[in-house]
Length: 461
Figure 1 (cartoon, rainbow, N blue to C red):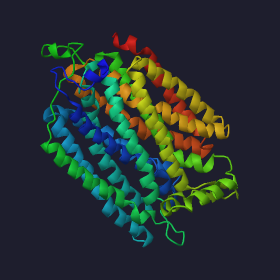
Figure 2 (cartoon, rainbow, N blue to C red):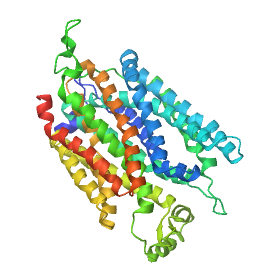
Figure 3 (spheres, rainbow, N blue to C red):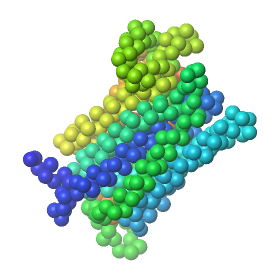
Figure 4 (cartoon, rainbow, N blue to C red):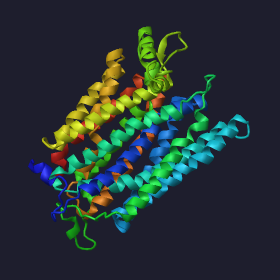
């Protein structure tokens, strides 16, 4: 057994923390599913409520607004309640948000009856999205830094990337669930998504209530991080602040722009695949029909992937694009696992800088509208985004001691970038086209690359 395997989950006191790590990693799976469903919801509202791309981006705004509003309170409560109490609080809030989708669906039904306006129905759904995000804020604010202390500190970035791999698994299943319930159709070919959208959220509410009970009875030790900068030694009133450390301040900025790029690419993936992909050869549709003929399950899953668009050309349908989003998240997950291996061998900041620079080049190739090459680059962007969030997180809270909980709250608050810049990406796409919209994430990845390559100078570590 190699040395890193021996110490990956062994605490400073010699205690094996693997079970705790596995339990906490289940939370990453949970919010991966939630985020994966959010990312394929925009196109549903564009069609059901006749919204533009920019207007549908209010889904991301509501989602990330929850993070922005609650990240600092969540960090404060995590300090007061400890890791265990904060996690349970977050799970219960997610349950409330999930259950809210039941009355929100009833409000939407009133739209078809002419009793309420489409805007009121949209606001009802946005309230549920925001409530779930508030609960996820608690979980992310606590679980991300917690994984960094569940073993030897030199493998903090490796552990958080392994845990985030569970998040990647959840992101794969999220779009599949979304395609089943957001883009479902009846026998006559009419959309039934507005009637079934609540089902996965009600199921999530049941799951998180069970998880809250499990965490209540589980042993979740409250472990303190290393205090490399001696912030904990400061006398009362002394001017020692997390904001005096450039590696933390720049992590907040880098996370803001990374999540902005991620949210834009994820939320407009369906729009890109249904409008920018070159014409689909008819042989593809025939081949898919032959494959699905051998299985009723495959027939249900593969049917309806292609449709003839307004120009009379065979293209990818909303359902097909939603399922293809899962392929994007497979690339994301592969990137997480391979990235965790790279981070165990190479400096985390160098890997982050390299991945950031590569994504600048990739998104510019999408912007240039190079046919199937640009389509492939969209999937490559998922791969190279994979390690960014957890690695920025680990680099940002490095050496901050007990202040790591407070610092993590501000890094989570930076997720607000996902609420603001996707609207800009949507505006560019509305004025030009979806390919041109990729100039926005390209600019964001420049900031991530700069942070990665300059981290040693920022941290003096």
